Picture 1 (cartoon, rainbow, N blue to C red):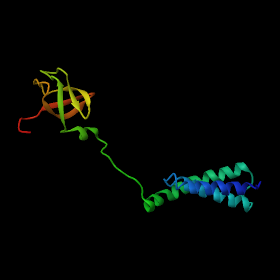
Picture 2 (picture 1 turned 90 degrees about the vertical axis):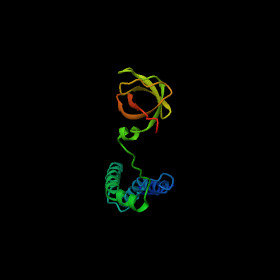
Picture 3 (picture 1 turned 90 degrees about the horizontal axis):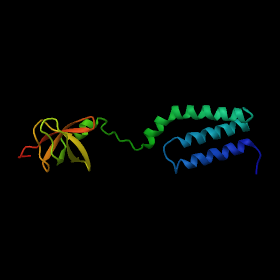
Picture 4 (picture 1 turned 120 degrees about the vertical axis):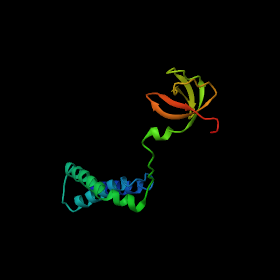
Length: 152
């Protein structure tokens, strides 16, 4: 076994770059590349000592991540999925089932919606249990609903 610090930096760097195959994401490979560069700098006696080695590794890691991660993501691709960030749009116009009568007036009832029970407010009229309703919006933790017409 070698007592040369550049050997250890090289081994750690290669192991990190190989770990990128198991932990994809384009980050670990840059940390490993930084370790290999630090090993070269130690071997060429451009730096000496552990504090300088860690400082160089830290700076190189940040520079490589900031400079090349976007490029790596474009070349390799990756999972990117953009969901709707407005929850109100996701629930608008969805159908729910009345579990406890809603109304008259502002009397809270309960609806079953997306597998859960929700408190619900109506349009002021009485909506009987067992009826289907359309979700208009959400007000705090209650859904605001309107009765479905018979032809829906």
